[in-house]
Amino acid sequence: MALPDFLVDGYKDWKENKFKNKKKFFHKISLTKQKPKAMIISCCDSRIVENAIFNAEAGDYFIHKNIANLILPIKKSKLNNNTNSAIEYAVKGLKVSHIFILGHSNCGGIKFAHDCFLKKTIDQNNKYKYLKDWVKPLKSIFIKFSKKKGEKNTLSNFERLSIENSLNNLLEYPYIKKLVKTNKLQIHGLWYDIGKGNIKYFDKKSKSFNNIA
Ligand SMILES: [Zn+2]
Image (tube, rainbow, N blue to C red; front, top):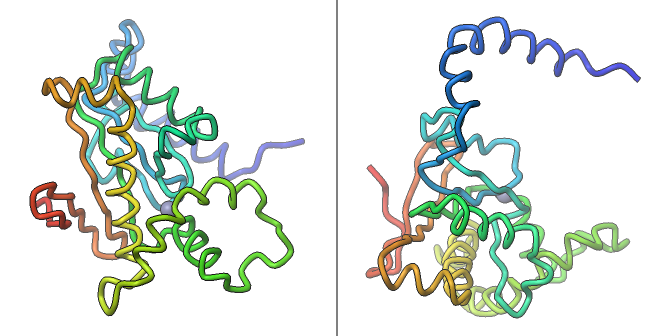
């Protein structure tokens, strides 16, 4: 089976241009252990290109992606083993001092959860068995969310509440809590508006999302 042209052509272009221009840099980073500045946990959505929006290079960020950038509560940690092992390695192995949970606008995963909880007709044939299980832990925040009115009852707000929820869930893990308490690790919530190119951060004091810059 032949590889598709878009993949091969894209690779060739990268190798002949971007790689060629930075050959020394790639050689240098290949000789040492990776030393990323921070970890990013973001959504699988193809529109989220972390290195592009933070103007980053290979080696800058340790990136883990899952549907809707979730960190599940500790009691669901078995379901979250993939994400938990990435966080564990970033924190204990690579000793990152920052973790960014990066959510985004028009998130299909968050919309799927929202519509499932609303019992809309989205998945009548039970097509998405795994996905349903994955988003189920969002039910408790959905119940609180569904009582909100106006601006607070939008999908964008549900996306942001989910980020806040993941930050709280992350703090349930004793080793994370300990590092945060002793200022060795900082955890941050970010929400990226794809259409506006705008990123907001979660301000823990005001419990609201404000523009980064
Ligand atoms: Zn998403």
